[in-house]
Amino acid sequence: MLKLIRDNPKAFLLALAIHLLLVLFLSFSLDWTSRHKLAAPDVDVIQAVMIDESKIRAEEERQRKLEEEKRRQQLEAEKRRKEEAARKQREAEQRQQTELKKKQEAERQRQAEAERKRKLEEQKRAEEQRKQQELEAKRRAEEEAKRKAEEARKRKEEAERQRKLEEERKRKEEAERQRKAEEERQRRAEEEARRRAEEERIRQEQIAAEQRAMEAARQRALANERDKYLALIQRRVEEKWVRPTSWPAGTACTVTVRLVPGSGGTAQVIDARLARSCGNPLFDRSVENAVFSASPLPFPKSPELMNEFRELTFNFRPEE
Image 1 (cartoon, rainbow, N blue to C red):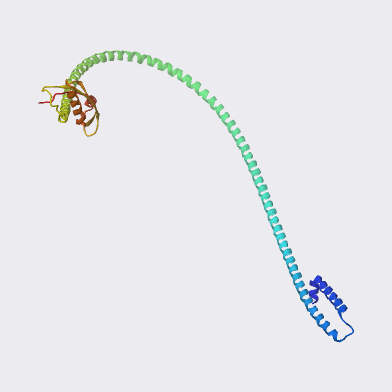
Image 2: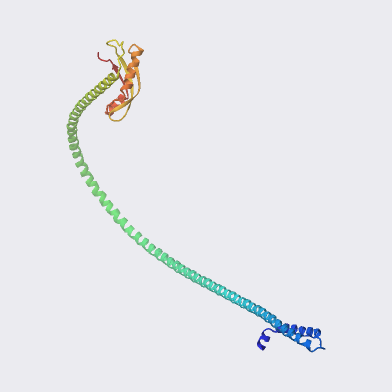
């Protein structure tokens, strides 16, 4: 009980005040002249005390919950404070680590830069020393080269003088030998030229004769092929020609046909006209119609005749 009062002093004081008020109220409402009437207030007082105790317990429960909520909030606040402190501690440690890394990196870079400068200085000194050594070696080499060049020049001058003397002697001997050899060579060259000229003349005559024979044979072959395809075209046109009823015997005309080569040794007719009329417009149209009806016409495969047959003129004289 004492522990409960210590834990909830406000609830205790409130309950005490309520009890005092009830006692005062009952005191004024009792009839002290009648002993019989005193029993009823006693019951009422006991009932009021019981109600007050339930209120007290409810108030105590509410106060307890408030205290628990307060302690919970305090614990949560303490937890948040600790977490915030831990977060700040971690951030501070991270910043310290970052600063430490930056300092270490800066120190490493400084040392690397110092090492690079040291190596550059060493390289510079080594390069200067090498250049000095090269200049010294070059100077000694130039002096040695000059000395050797002077000795070589003198030897060369002497050798040149001896060479010129020897060359003069050999030149005279060679000139005499060449003169005789040239005379012999010219004589042989003239004889060889006459022989080759005669052989070339004979060879050219043979080539010309062969070419004339080949050209004649080719022309005959072309003429035969030309006559062959002309005959084929004329026969093809005659086959497609519808003879007019009044066509007189011996009537002839000349037809010009334009062809476009196709496939399979044939050509398509793209134009046909009478170069020389048959003497009658009806006859002329019958011949033109026959040419168009005969398309495709036989067409030579020889390249020389293909261009010739692209525009072809032939006589149309049908047999009786």
